[in-house]
Length: 281
Ligand SMILES: Cc1ncc(COP(=O)(O)O)c(C=O)c1O
Image (cartoon, rainbow, N blue to C red):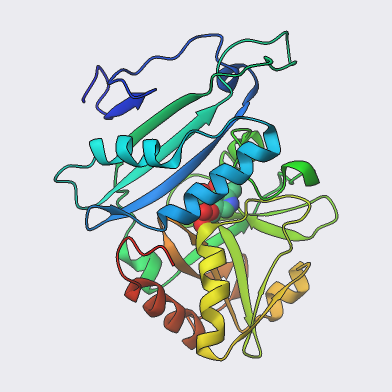
C-alpha cells in the first residue's frame, strides 16, 4: 500500500498517490473531507463521519461514494494499526466547463492513513492557550456546517502564530461572533449550561461537538446553541475546544484572560474517553 510518499494512500481504490491535474478538488476545492481518529484499530464515530460526508455531498450535488466501499478501503489501510488518523477526501472528479460541473460526475475518492499526532498530554490534562485570530470567517449559509475542501480562511488564520505556546486560534465572523477554532469547535460552560456557537452561517459542524451535545444531558447539563461574543467568553466558567483528533482541550488562557480546567470539562473528557472504541452511537 505504501507509495512514493510515506503516507499509505488509496486513490479510487488503487494504491497510488496521483490524481489528475484537472481534478476539481484541486482546481476549485470542489469536494469534501473527513478526518477520523482510529483507536484500537477502529475508526471512531465512523457512521457520523459518513453521515456528514453524505450530507456534504448532497449539499454540493456530488454523488457520494458508497460508505461500505469507503469502509473496505479504510480497513485495507489499517491492518495492525492501533492508533492513527484516517483522512477521506471526496472530490467531484474531473470535467465540466469551467466552474460548471459535469453532467455525470465521477467522484475521486482518496483514503489516506496518517500517523497519530504527538500533541503533548498537557494539552488535554492542563489545557491550552489560544489567540483570537485577525482572519475572520465569512458567513455563507449554503456551505455552513459541511466539511468542504475550501479552507483558505483557516490557512490564513493558522499563519498568524508560530510555536507551541499558543495551540489554537479562535475565529470570529465579521460581526464579532466567535464561531470556532481554526481546527476545532468551541464550547463555554456557564452556570451548568454548555454553550456552543450557532453554525448556521459558517463553521464546521464537528462530530465531537455533536457527541458532546448528546452526552451533556447525562451530566445534568443543558445545551444552548447561540451567538457567542468575547464578553460571554471572558465571563465563562470554563472554555474548551473539540475535534476528532484532540478530543477535548480545556482552554486556560487568551491574552490576559485565564480560565482553569473545570469540573464540567473534566467530566466530559472522561465521558468521551470512556465511550467504546469505534463507538457509532
Ligand atoms: C474548521 C474546523 N472546525 C471544527 C472541526 C471539528 O470537527 P470534528 O469534531 O468533526 O473533528 C474541525 C476539524 O478538523 C475543523 O477543521
